[in-house]
Figure 1 (tube, rainbow, N blue to C red):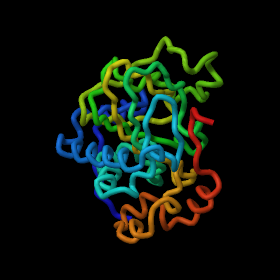
Figure 2: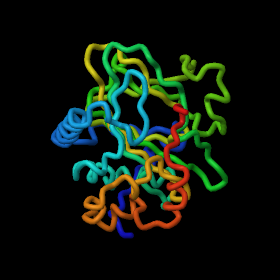
Figure 3: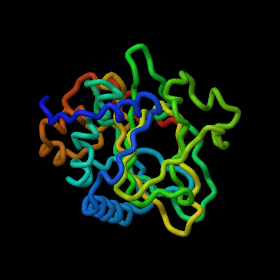
Figure 4: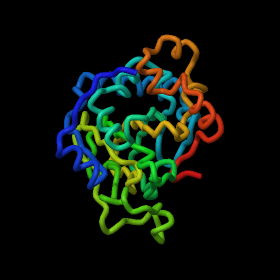
Length: 264
């Protein structure tokens, strides 16, 4: 499968290797952020209580899942060449989209997501298994529920729930992901991370494009979730990225999809 290749800088590669996190300030233009927000707002209104039910729901949070099924704007989001280059650096050349979700932290809440590794996965002898990208569709501030993370823990070789007395408690080395709307954060999803409480009176919205190695199950089995109409119109690149014609993915994802690192 041919796709546009973009090179990362040495500093970008070091950030992913050493910290486990690469922040791309103002990556998404304001008009693209507005387009994503508008479609997500429509879906929250259309789906109501069923929003996010294809995957899982969580306290004090509004979620959407299976977003590739809901519009071309999401297809553009998952196939940005710069982002795929970053994912490839983390996972190697054989990767696929695992899920595409929206997450809105409700206002005036107190619940903090426990530190976790996505899908509860640890690297193995073949390398990293998971990579996540957070699209800031609102400003992320210290007050409105930013993602917290513990730098370097993608190399710890342990899940936080096994290493810590309380994965929901503050960690002495944790930092907070803040930035303006349009900023993106690519992170090695073995790095310990979690959402925090939104103490403001407005919701805080993000899009999460989550990728995994091709020998791992998708978090959301795309071939089963995407409508036939959507599947038929997708390009060769998108079909590869979604693993729609991959027998190994059919075997893995038909049995093991649905895993989350913090919700059992």
